[in-house]
Image 1 (cartoon, one colour):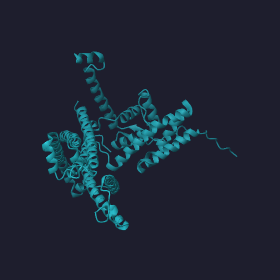
Image 2 (cartoon, rainbow over the protein chains, first blue to last red; image 1 turned 135 degrees about the horizontal axis):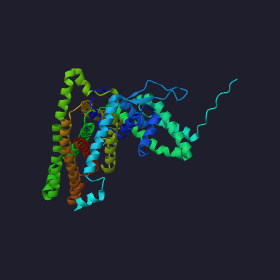
Image 3 (cartoon, one colour; image 1 turned 135 degrees about the vertical axis):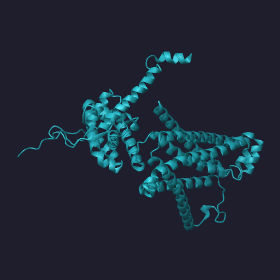
Image 4 (cartoon, each protein chain N blue to C red; image 1 turned 90 degrees about the vertical axis):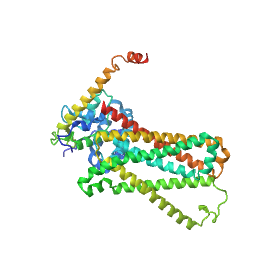
Length: 128
Length: 351
């Protein structure tokens, strides 16, 4: 597991699954199914990850120290006690921030290329 | 007496889906299954129940293609991770590209050497080349292309290997050995792969001999089928054993060198430098493969009688040549893909 001194940049770029899991856990700890639902909700259904991808990503994120399994278990009467809950670590938060920063820079480049504002115009200009 | 609380009935389609998913998971690595099998199954059950509540059996069936695809590819990737480890160094894509290029280049050089063996002795081919310049030109391209690929592999690979070993030296001789070490499970897989390669090659050899070889086959003319059955079995066992061993040694050395790269961490500059020889190798491979294809076609078009003869490409040698060119083409595609991925990763990183 990586320490808190790890440079978040060394873990970038993140896969869409890992990035979205980090975003899903930004509001607090969640269990696997809840993470899947939150990802589907936060991407308006454009990204749906299944349990295999979810737990492969969780395994790697635990190894990298981006998340930890929460020790606290909810009241068994309210929830299935077999469920595992995960939450972000400090490194996980910093890596998510670094990835957002990277994506913002990419977006800024895309804006500067006029791709987002008026694609037809930019293509026509290049054609001339 | 207190009555047991009745559990809600789980639809049969959900039970069937769970059985399928459980079976798929059982094909995955034991460690992953042990650690995450139960929660994955539990979450899949919830996905199925939610889909059933929304759209009934059809909704559950609609989950299958996506989940089967996702599970199979995920478990294969997990096997890969288990076998070769998982590193998150700088530019891991370029690191993987280096390994893919190395493996493809070894395969390419095998096919290239075998191609050279077919056109040996070269004198009759040179005679055709003097009459048909395009045959001579493409043959020269094949010869130089293969040599350039080999040179680029050595010149590009040695600094990488040197740096990896240099990193491991402070940890003592054990660390250096550990860097090259192949795990028993990996060795077994390589042995199996060597056996498959040997059996396929021998099968291809026997098939081409049967189809294109001389019609009569006796115990005295060296034909393998003309020998007594016991001797034939013994001969085959010795041949398969020795070739398998040879292939295994080559595979083991290639895998060990690949593991060195995967187990080491390199600076960004070093990984970017590696893209140069990878690009040269891809270009040399592509040139050689195209030239070899044109050379074969031109030889059959310009000098068909020579091509069909024994000293030319007769007696099934054309079938072998096609197999070698196909191998070269596959290696070229792998290397070009690795180069493109590495370059893209490098450019994204730089932006």
